[in-house]
Length: 252
Length: 212
Image (tube, rainbow over all chains, first blue to last red):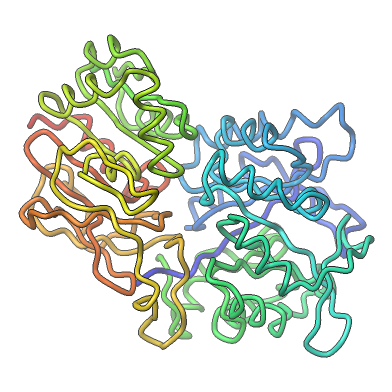
């Protein structure tokens, strides 16, 4: 059986791993290569880098980070943040990324999803969706770390990018991100049930049961978390052992 | 010096394959190349592929690599990966395109009506992630890899060989499908050994010391 994936996420700012709460108050969490290698040793199924570097002068640093990680860590790497065009996608893939995630650029220009998937294949294209609940059973897509509303319905947007050629959805609840209160399971399940491509649940993990809930109740194909792994609260292996104990298929 | 050529026809990142082989095989020269002469000069050949098979076939021919690939598939240790496995077959449903016809059989898409898991939940396509690879024949490339070890897959199409004797492994995803094929000097896998952690590195190491 296909295993549900656990994906540690590293927010990278100018070459350093950081973690914020609700996208503010960044705390230093280490060297990306070291952190990635540690997660690989713990049995992470993939690693995601989100480049949050603001300065355009530092934008190429992420390419070097990806190159270094890809030389030492032989599991899939996804990289997102600041991807604006097909050339950005190519540069990241050539540096050693296996998948590239896009967010704001896809909202601004949905054709980018189709163009990128056409050039490099759907399997390399992840669309990241940041969503906030706006009514019961209804979520809106936001960009710029939750600051800008788009008017797009999250479920409809997921269906649209899937039809344009996205290979996977990275779904983050902006209401939950950084809160440690668990995934927005309603959002996760609504999106996962609405599309035929895999969904990665993100935003809000505070304990290991939250990860399992994302799979069992949210029907996510993979679960992503940052802070519970970065600060040594839990290892990926502990997360997998708990998921297995709850009857979830994992790679251990 | 063991010289391995990774055939580069412009489809996808081959850096990971090269780095993984360098990681497991000391005293090896790894060449990522689009030059048929390099392929002919190599001791072993890796034939990868990403994206859509019609694009892969077109780019392969645009670079004049088809004769060198077919020659290598006849006479040296040859490892096909992902679309590099699919292209060895006669035909793909993806884009209704002919392949290289090294093996008889069809490349098929996962059937929508069978994509239901044991718990009744929908199975997503692409089939993405770590799944169990069940070995169907003893083979030097399976050395030190437990039966049922998990490898990383990402694909929507799979090979359906006409000759069941070449099936080297199967994996279950809604249906049992062929995860690896083997015949003489050829071993070809749908999964990505270069992204499959220890099991994948072991397979690449086995390939580098394989004497078919």
